[in-house]
Amino acid sequence: MTPRPVLIAPHAALRRVCDPVEQFDGALGDLAMELLRAMYLAQGRGLAAPQIGVSQRIFVMDAGWKAGQPSPMVFVNPEIIAQSDQLVSLEEGCLSIPDHPVVVARPAWVDLRWNTLSGALQQARFDGFESACVQHERDHLDGILITDKEAA
Ligand SMILES: [Zn+2]
Image 1 (cartoon, helix red, strand yellow):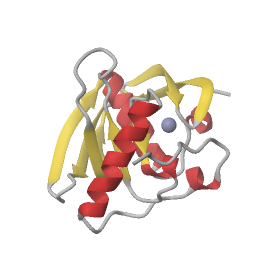
Image 2 (cartoon, rainbow, N blue to C red):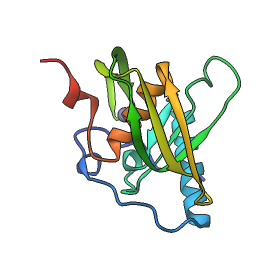
Image 3 (cartoon, rainbow, N blue to C red):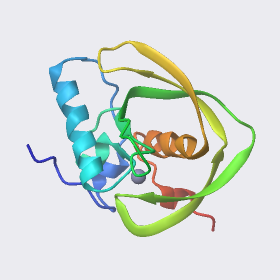
Image 4 (tube, rainbow, N blue to C red):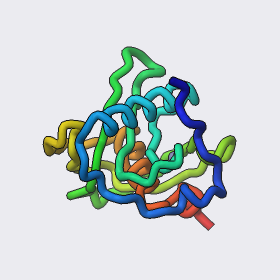
């Protein structure tokens, strides 16, 4: 199955506040697989459901696959429950905004809580590049793009 194409800004689907996932069923697993396929196909490190036109609170990430072994991760209903006071600026790219990297200042680390595909709750701290990545993808679920955070 070919995944749906990644939507490019300005597309209305990228600006929606997505709905919480309530059904942890086979369709959700299929959506996660589709997101991962689309992400790897586009040479990305993260992809959120609204980027393929699905208004649900789920994103995928594999921050290190270009450097070594793939380690796909799926985050359903992710929430940042704590964050560093220290801000770090990193250049970020977005598959929905091709060829327009933006330097974004974000908390150096975040504690993220999310549901797995089976609905179980998980929590972990992310720092470095992964911290920026989970915050970037989490923003997509609220219709927020990196161009909104571009320094004036
Ligand atoms: Zn993005």
